[in-house]
Length: 299
Image (cartoon, rainbow, N blue to C red; front, side, top):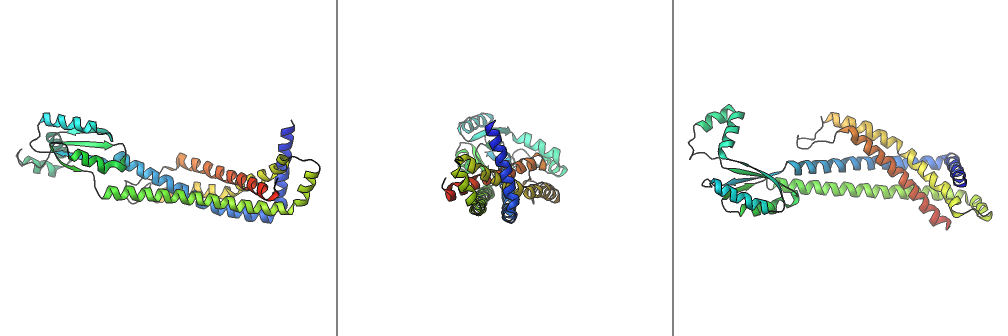
């Protein structure tokens, strides 16, 4: 029962301290709110960039065109060589006849044009469509496939794919860096706020130590105070995250510029992001308070 009494007393003292030092608490909550809003934007941006990258990885295909004189046996040999490449996840094979029939079924124009071509005049080739495990190694994989006998041409959107992958990877790293940097700033703000509170209560803390209060008894109210500040500071960012992302998603109709760049659906994404923001607020409040107590009270 004693631990519960101590916890209850600590919560009461922390709440009283927040109210008693309202101006300091409000300044700290305001700073935490602004910082967490930017953190929330960073989280949503980084997760959407990750989603874009994963979508590209899922849809990215290397198209392997076989030579015109390649036989069915040659196609089987090519398949065996493709299988040996470690970065290949799966592949499908289509003959030029199957490709022709598919194109004719999709368009009357293709149907008319392709019907006028003789078999030896057709530019269509037997193809393998290859999906890779790691998109960062797509260029190396394409070069290996290109060296296989009876392979005429390999295409995967060279240049554009490499640039997109590098761009998304850079943006993802930058957003993660910004989020981490802002979290550290938030911790710093809380440390300074709690430090001011501690300075104002040095007499009270000195009396507590004289009467034999343990280090935990002295520290716990400050740690809980930091948690309260972090929790209060996360309310507005959670509202901004929830309603702001809904509005953003609807405004852009669920994608940016192209259907290829799909945004993450609001539900359950906004709930997960909100929980993360509240958790970050509480956690940095605890860490900031604990650091301030340890550093400035020397207990």
